[in-house]
Structure formats: C-alpha cells, structure tokens
Image (cartoon, rainbow over all chains, first blue to last red):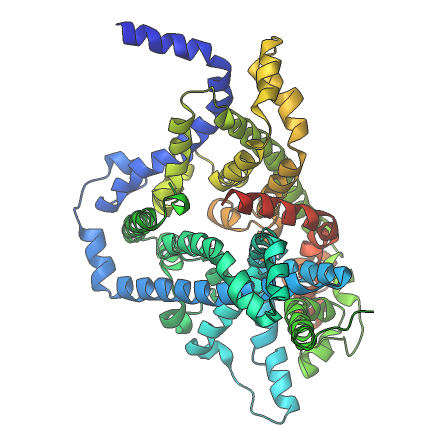
Length: 307
Length: 297
C-alpha cells in the first residue's frame, strides 16, 4: 500500500517529464513491441481475413519449407560472408583514408577531397542501381565501352554471378567511405599531439609514428565499430542488394541475402508464412549474436560494452 | 625555410596520389550519370556512356518536363513527407533525449533500456507489415511514408550524447526559478542544442528524401509515389513511362524515338538535384554531428 502510494506520488512529481516521453514510448510500443508479439505469425498459416491471432497454428511447417528448399543455407551464408567482407574492406579503406587525410597539411585540398568522398553517402540506392546499370550493362555500359576501346571482347556482366560479389563490395565501400573516414578522422584528431612531437624529436619517422602511435590509438574505435557491425552480421542491407541486383534470378545464388529473400517471399510469391519464418530465424540469430558479442566485450573491457 | 624531411616527402607523394584517386573513384560514377543525361540517345546507343557527352543534347530534360505534372507530383509527395516527418521527428527526438539526460529523473535508465531493446530484438518484416496494413490500415496513406522513419534509437543516442554535455546547472537553476520542465526544454535546451538538431535533422531528412522502400511496401496508387520510388519504377520500366508521355503528346510514333537511356539519366539528376545543391551547406553539420556521436564512444 505504502509502495503504491509512493509510486503514484512519483508519477505525479514527474508528470511533465513522463508526458514528454509519451509520444516516443507509444511510437516504439506500436511499431517495435507490437510486431514482436506478432512474431508468432511464423508458426501460423496466415490469412488476411483472420489476422495474426485468428489464423490457425501450424507448428514448424513454415520453417520446414524454408530449410528444406535449401534457401535458408544459401541466404544465410551469403548474408554472413558479404557482411564479413564489407566489414573488412570498409574498415581497411576508411582507416587508410583517415590516416592519409589526417597528415595532409593543405587545408583546402583536405576539405575538398573529404567533401567529394562524402558525396556518395547522399546518393540513394535506387540511383546506385542506375549507376551500376550504366557501368555494367552489355550494350552501352561504360565498362564494355572501355573493353572495346582496348579491342577486347565485351562481357555480359549481368549473367556472371561471381562478378557481382566484387561489384557489391565495391559499391558498399563507395557509399560508406566518407562516413567511415570521418569517424576515424575524429578519433585521430583526439590523439594528443604532444605524443607525435615527442616521437619526432626521438627520431621516429612518419611511417613509424603512424604504426606506433596512430594505429594503436585507433584500436578502441575500430573495436566498437566492428562490434556494432558484427552484431548485425545476420542483417543484409536490403536497399543495396535489391537495387543493384533487383529480380535478376540468375545472380541469386551469389547475391541473395536473408532480407531480399524475405521481401520477395512476402511481396512476390505471397508466401507470408515462409517470409515470417525467415524473419523469425533472422531476429533470433541477430539477438544471440549481439548477446555473445556484448558478453565477450564486457569480459575484455567493460567500457567498450554496448550495454 | 625548414627543409622538408625525406620521409615526409615520400609520404606526401603517396598520400596525395591515393587521395586523388579515391576522390575520383567517388565522383566518376556520378559524373557518368550527369554526362549521360546531356548526351543524345543515338550517341549513347552507339558509343555508350562516357565521362563527357560526345553529342551534347538537352532533349532528355525537355522530354522529362514535357508533362511536368508527372514529376512535380512526386516532388510534392517527397517534399511534404520530408518536411512534416523531419519537423515532427526532430522535435520528438529532442524531447525524448532531453528527458533521458535529466539525472533527477529516476526512471531514465529504465526508459533508455525500453528504447534500446528495440535495436536488439525485432519482430522482423512480416509482423510489422501486417500491422501497418491490416491493423493500422495504412495502405495508400501518406502516414505509411512518414511513420516508419519518424524516430530512431540511433538519432536519440546522438542527441542524448550531445545534450548531456549541457551543464545540469542550467536545468536546475531554471527549476528553482519556477520554470516547468517543458518550458526549460523549449526555451533553454533547444537553443543550446543547435548543432545536434542540425545533424539529426539532416539524418532524418536524408532518410526521408532517399526513401523508396516504404513506398514500395505500402503505396499502390501511382499518384502518391515518392520521388525515389517514382524513379525506381521508371528505370525498371522505361517503356511504361514512354507510353505515358507519348499518350499525353497524342502521337503514337513519337514513342519509338523517345530517348529511353538519356531520359533515365535526366530523371536521376532531377531526383538527386536538391540534395546535391544542399550538400555543400549540410556537409559541415554532418561531419560535426558524426564527431559528436564518435566522442560518445
């Protein structure tokens, strides 16, 4: 009783703050927590008229189909491998560019190039889809124009799945370069300049300074950004894959990820059950990965843990 | 003058070359699109896409604006969605973040976790899609374009880390003077948070401007297409668009000669235009904001 009264008193005392939180609380309740309840649709034979709760239970049938078709393995493998490649390539390129830019003394050059490198971040994936088509389409793509210029045979890139692995990695790096570089550059700017001066006096050349001061100082930032990315290793960038690859079935074996698979199952084959099963599978794997990653970090370094 | 040491010389040479190459790689794809939009169709079909138009032509643009209503309508949709979504989203993000930084608010950690949890576990696409369509009835509704991008935990975190750098004493002394929490937020905190507001506002606006996904999921009525989805539809089905234009022109044989490839490029430029024009002004804030986020660590 006492406790209850205390609670109401506290609510009353904080009522303005609580009211200020209310819109966001309702928003996340409706658009994030309600769908979590709705996840049971993965175990149902969904039909529109009966809704999520009225539709009959069917146990694991939706999952059976997803796994037996062999799709589960392919899309999971692709999602994880692409993400690993993205993490590795992007981190290396972004750190390299950040280090190079940090040592450039010419302010205007630095500003101009940094601005231009950030530009792709503003380009939508729909437009990146147009750009890849411009470059790689068989009849009049830039790539084939170049090949012809050197008297080489034109290549139909759109029928070669392997090529798209590199194209996707390339455009992912292209889009994220400016953004990531800024993050690492900010970390480099935070390093105490006296350390560099002392090293210089001690005779360390610029390459040694980068190797022994800059890179070690970046380790915490690298760790955090990599961990955040690893936590999402089961999530594919739908926008990117769908706009660059589209519905080109010949490429799916090498390019289909869980997210594109789910959307196609839902919208094109109208297989709500299988789409829900794939989504459920993905959510659970994501959650488990994040938990494992976070526990490992916590053990290693409490400050760098995500929560 | 001080002599530049040898290691510095080598490093600079490498650095300038690498940076210039990377910069070119970043902008060349964009230049190809712009150049393609100013190239005559016959030149594209025979010579392919190039960095500089071989045969200069603006016919793709005059064609794109032949029936300007088609594009302007989508422009209207995107402008409306971007403006309303950014204003509401930014305000709620700031308000939420402020409460979460108030150290005297004893449930702030509980609420923080309530928000943060949504990034750890999600219901996935299907339950969310069913919720939007069957329970909230948002098919062919502008709210379906606005609501999904309104708030994000990431934005709340950026805003929160900036606001926690504002001294608590400001809120405390205003409280002693008898100001209410909401008044403190509006009159004191918002004006002090301008850099964070600019950054987060840009993040939100950029996501609205580039959004095609929600239009694909929820919009069937082609009069309600957002700009990016309109472009998506056209590049994947240029013939359908040619039909619309040919019909509005009246003559059927125009259709055969319509420049499909350069038209796609012109539309791409028209769709991206405003973002690129704004870019020099907003880029500064982006860098600033990302740095704010990074400092938080």
